[in-house]
Length: 235
Image (cartoon, rainbow, N blue to C red):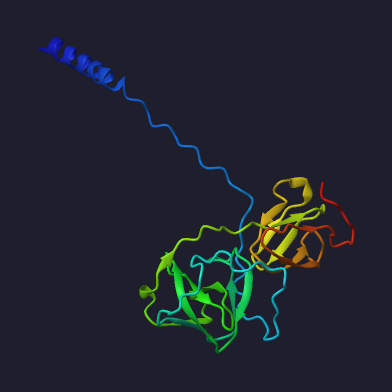
Protein backbone atom coordinates (compact mmCIF):
# COMPACT_ATOMS: atom_id res chain seq x y z
CA UNK A 1 0.00 0.00 0.00
CA UNK A 2 2.80 2.41 0.78
CA UNK A 3 4.27 2.34 -2.76
CA UNK A 4 0.77 2.85 -4.23
CA UNK A 5 0.21 6.00 -2.13
CA UNK A 6 3.53 7.39 -3.21
CA UNK A 7 2.65 6.71 -6.85
CA UNK A 8 -0.73 8.50 -6.53
CA UNK A 9 0.88 11.55 -4.88
CA UNK A 10 3.36 11.77 -7.75
CA UNK A 11 0.82 11.33 -10.58
CA UNK A 12 -1.80 13.88 -9.41
CA UNK A 13 0.54 16.94 -9.61
CA UNK A 14 1.66 15.84 -13.06
CA UNK A 15 -1.94 15.63 -14.27
CA UNK A 16 -2.74 19.11 -12.88
CA UNK A 17 0.33 20.57 -14.50
CA UNK A 18 -0.71 19.14 -17.84
CA UNK A 19 -4.21 20.64 -17.55
CA UNK A 20 -2.91 24.08 -16.67
CA UNK A 21 -0.18 24.14 -19.30
CA UNK A 22 -2.54 25.54 -21.96
CA UNK A 23 -3.94 28.30 -19.71
CA UNK A 24 -2.32 31.69 -20.36
CA UNK A 25 -2.23 34.32 -17.62
CA UNK A 26 -4.26 37.47 -18.27
CA UNK A 27 -2.39 40.24 -20.04
CA UNK A 28 -2.52 43.65 -18.36
CA UNK A 29 -4.33 46.23 -20.46
CA UNK A 30 -2.33 49.36 -21.13
CA UNK A 31 -3.78 52.54 -19.61
CA UNK A 32 -4.78 55.28 -22.04
CA UNK A 33 -2.28 58.07 -22.42
CA UNK A 34 -2.99 61.21 -20.42
CA UNK A 35 -3.54 64.45 -22.28
CA UNK A 36 -2.47 67.87 -21.12
CA UNK A 37 -5.44 69.73 -22.57
CA UNK A 38 -7.90 70.00 -19.68
CA UNK A 39 -11.04 71.95 -20.44
CA UNK A 40 -12.14 74.19 -17.58
CA UNK A 41 -15.63 75.51 -17.01
CA UNK A 42 -16.10 79.19 -16.16
CA UNK A 43 -19.88 79.05 -15.86
CA UNK A 44 -19.55 80.45 -12.31
CA UNK A 45 -19.52 83.77 -14.17
CA UNK A 46 -23.26 83.70 -14.61
CA UNK A 47 -23.92 87.25 -13.52
CA UNK A 48 -22.47 89.65 -16.10
CA UNK A 49 -23.26 93.29 -15.47
CA UNK A 50 -26.49 94.73 -16.81
CA UNK A 51 -24.43 96.74 -19.28
CA UNK A 52 -22.68 93.68 -20.69
CA UNK A 53 -22.38 93.72 -24.46
CA UNK A 54 -21.73 90.90 -26.88
CA UNK A 55 -18.88 91.64 -29.34
CA UNK A 56 -19.97 91.84 -32.96
CA UNK A 57 -17.35 89.25 -33.93
CA UNK A 58 -19.00 86.54 -31.87
CA UNK A 59 -20.53 83.72 -33.95
CA UNK A 60 -24.26 83.43 -34.24
CA UNK A 61 -26.24 80.47 -32.98
CA UNK A 62 -25.20 78.23 -35.84
CA UNK A 63 -25.38 75.15 -33.63
CA UNK A 64 -29.15 75.42 -33.41
CA UNK A 65 -30.71 72.12 -34.30
CA UNK A 66 -34.04 73.64 -35.25
CA UNK A 67 -33.34 75.66 -38.39
CA UNK A 68 -36.37 77.93 -38.05
CA UNK A 69 -38.19 79.24 -35.02
CA UNK A 70 -41.43 77.28 -34.66
CA UNK A 71 -44.63 79.28 -35.00
CA UNK A 72 -46.05 77.72 -31.83
CA UNK A 73 -43.79 77.33 -28.81
CA UNK A 74 -44.16 74.51 -26.28
CA UNK A 75 -45.56 75.77 -22.97
CA UNK A 76 -42.12 75.69 -21.34
CA UNK A 77 -40.04 78.73 -20.41
CA UNK A 78 -36.78 79.41 -18.63
CA UNK A 79 -36.20 82.52 -16.52
CA UNK A 80 -33.11 84.20 -15.05
CA UNK A 81 -34.01 84.48 -11.37
CA UNK A 82 -30.84 85.22 -9.36
CA UNK A 83 -28.79 87.13 -11.89
CA UNK A 84 -28.05 87.28 -15.58
CA UNK A 85 -27.43 84.04 -17.47
CA UNK A 86 -25.30 83.49 -20.55
CA UNK A 87 -26.98 82.21 -23.71
CA UNK A 88 -24.38 80.09 -25.50
CA UNK A 89 -23.83 79.07 -29.10
CA UNK A 90 -24.34 75.40 -28.27
CA UNK A 91 -25.28 73.10 -25.39
CA UNK A 92 -22.04 73.20 -23.41
CA UNK A 93 -19.60 75.44 -21.53
CA UNK A 94 -17.11 75.10 -24.40
CA UNK A 95 -19.30 77.16 -26.74
CA UNK A 96 -19.06 80.95 -26.94
CA UNK A 97 -21.73 83.05 -25.23
CA UNK A 98 -23.74 84.87 -27.87
CA UNK A 99 -26.19 86.79 -25.70
CA UNK A 100 -27.45 87.25 -22.15
CA UNK A 101 -30.76 86.34 -20.53
CA UNK A 102 -31.09 89.19 -18.06
CA UNK A 103 -32.42 88.81 -14.54
CA UNK A 104 -36.22 88.64 -14.27
CA UNK A 105 -36.64 87.94 -17.99
CA UNK A 106 -37.80 84.70 -19.62
CA UNK A 107 -37.36 82.90 -22.92
CA UNK A 108 -39.44 80.16 -24.58
CA UNK A 109 -37.82 76.71 -24.61
CA UNK A 110 -37.99 74.96 -27.99
CA UNK A 111 -35.49 72.12 -27.54
CA UNK A 112 -33.23 70.31 -25.09
CA UNK A 113 -30.12 68.14 -25.14
CA UNK A 114 -30.52 64.42 -24.57
CA UNK A 115 -29.51 64.75 -20.90
CA UNK A 116 -31.89 67.68 -20.28
CA UNK A 117 -29.03 69.75 -18.85
CA UNK A 118 -29.26 72.41 -21.57
CA UNK A 119 -32.30 73.93 -23.24
CA UNK A 120 -32.54 75.67 -26.60
CA UNK A 121 -34.33 79.00 -26.40
CA UNK A 122 -35.46 81.80 -28.66
CA UNK A 123 -33.38 84.82 -27.67
CA UNK A 124 -35.76 87.54 -26.42
CA UNK A 125 -36.37 90.31 -28.93
CA UNK A 126 -34.91 88.37 -31.87
CA UNK A 127 -35.45 85.40 -34.14
CA UNK A 128 -32.13 83.82 -33.12
CA UNK A 129 -31.66 80.77 -30.96
CA UNK A 130 -29.15 79.76 -28.31
CA UNK A 131 -28.65 77.43 -25.36
CA UNK A 132 -28.99 77.95 -21.60
CA UNK A 133 -27.62 75.77 -18.81
CA UNK A 134 -30.49 74.49 -16.67
CA UNK A 135 -28.68 73.59 -13.44
CA UNK A 136 -26.76 76.79 -12.82
CA UNK A 137 -28.81 77.92 -9.84
CA UNK A 138 -29.51 81.17 -11.70
CA UNK A 139 -32.18 79.75 -13.99
CA UNK A 140 -35.68 78.45 -13.34
CA UNK A 141 -37.71 76.20 -15.63
CA UNK A 142 -41.49 76.42 -15.84
CA UNK A 143 -43.45 73.69 -17.60
CA UNK A 144 -42.98 70.06 -18.51
CA UNK A 145 -39.51 69.74 -20.07
CA UNK A 146 -40.26 66.21 -21.27
CA UNK A 147 -42.76 67.71 -23.72
CA UNK A 148 -39.90 69.47 -25.55
CA UNK A 149 -38.05 67.53 -28.30
CA UNK A 150 -34.48 66.50 -27.56
CA UNK A 151 -31.62 66.91 -30.03
CA UNK A 152 -27.95 66.02 -30.41
CA UNK A 153 -25.78 68.83 -31.81
CA UNK A 154 -23.70 68.23 -34.91
CA UNK A 155 -21.63 71.43 -34.67
CA UNK A 156 -18.99 70.85 -32.01
CA UNK A 157 -17.10 73.56 -30.07
CA UNK A 158 -13.73 74.70 -31.36
CA UNK A 159 -10.97 74.50 -28.70
CA UNK A 160 -9.05 77.60 -27.72
CA UNK A 161 -5.68 77.09 -26.03
CA UNK A 162 -3.76 79.16 -23.47
CA UNK A 163 -0.01 78.81 -24.16
CA UNK A 164 2.75 79.70 -21.71
CA UNK A 165 5.69 81.18 -23.63
CA UNK A 166 7.64 82.25 -20.52
CA UNK A 167 10.22 80.37 -18.46
CA UNK A 168 8.04 80.56 -15.33
CA UNK A 169 5.17 78.34 -14.22
CA UNK A 170 1.78 80.06 -14.35
CA UNK A 171 -1.37 79.64 -12.27
CA UNK A 172 -4.78 80.16 -13.88
CA UNK A 173 -7.95 81.19 -12.07
CA UNK A 174 -10.74 80.21 -12.09
CA UNK A 175 -9.94 76.56 -12.53
CA UNK A 176 -6.80 76.36 -10.35
CA UNK A 177 -4.69 75.18 -13.28
CA UNK A 178 -0.90 75.24 -13.35
CA UNK A 179 0.65 75.67 -16.80
CA UNK A 180 4.36 74.71 -16.83
CA UNK A 181 7.04 76.91 -18.37
CA UNK A 182 7.74 76.69 -22.08
CA UNK A 183 10.51 74.14 -21.41
CA UNK A 184 7.75 71.58 -20.82
CA UNK A 185 6.30 71.79 -24.34
CA UNK A 186 3.65 70.53 -25.12
CA UNK A 187 2.53 70.55 -21.46
CA UNK A 188 2.80 74.35 -21.51
CA UNK A 189 -0.63 74.74 -23.11
CA UNK A 190 -4.15 73.88 -22.01
CA UNK A 191 -7.63 74.08 -23.49
CA UNK A 192 -9.77 76.63 -21.66
CA UNK A 193 -13.48 77.21 -22.14
CA UNK A 194 -14.64 80.67 -23.23
CA UNK A 195 -14.55 83.17 -20.38
CA UNK A 196 -12.34 85.52 -18.40
CA UNK A 197 -9.25 84.31 -16.52
CA UNK A 198 -6.44 85.68 -14.37
CA UNK A 199 -2.83 84.53 -14.84
CA UNK A 200 -0.41 84.54 -11.88
CA UNK A 201 3.34 83.84 -11.87
CA UNK A 202 3.84 81.15 -9.21
CA UNK A 203 7.59 81.09 -9.79
CA UNK A 204 7.85 84.52 -8.15
CA UNK A 205 7.41 85.42 -4.46
CA UNK A 206 3.88 86.59 -3.80
CA UNK A 207 2.67 85.01 -7.05
CA UNK A 208 2.05 88.36 -8.85
CA UNK A 209 -0.69 88.70 -11.43
CA UNK A 210 0.76 89.06 -14.90
CA UNK A 211 -2.27 89.07 -17.17
CA UNK A 212 -6.05 89.12 -17.46
CA UNK A 213 -7.24 87.20 -20.49
CA UNK A 214 -10.43 86.42 -22.36
CA UNK A 215 -10.72 83.02 -24.03
CA UNK A 216 -12.83 82.49 -27.13
CA UNK A 217 -13.67 79.48 -29.24
CA UNK A 218 -10.89 78.67 -31.70
CA UNK A 219 -8.62 81.49 -30.47
CA UNK A 220 -5.22 80.70 -28.92
CA UNK A 221 -3.84 83.14 -26.33
CA UNK A 222 -0.14 83.37 -25.41
CA UNK A 223 1.39 84.35 -22.05
CA UNK A 224 4.49 86.26 -23.11
CA UNK A 225 5.51 88.20 -19.99
CA UNK A 226 6.43 86.74 -16.59
CA UNK A 227 6.31 88.31 -13.12
CA UNK A 228 9.68 90.02 -13.60
CA UNK A 229 8.47 91.79 -16.71
CA UNK A 230 10.70 89.71 -18.97
CA UNK A 231 9.11 89.04 -22.35
CA UNK A 232 9.32 85.82 -24.34
CA UNK A 233 8.07 84.54 -27.65
CA UNK A 234 6.68 81.09 -28.20
CA UNK A 235 8.76 78.95 -30.57
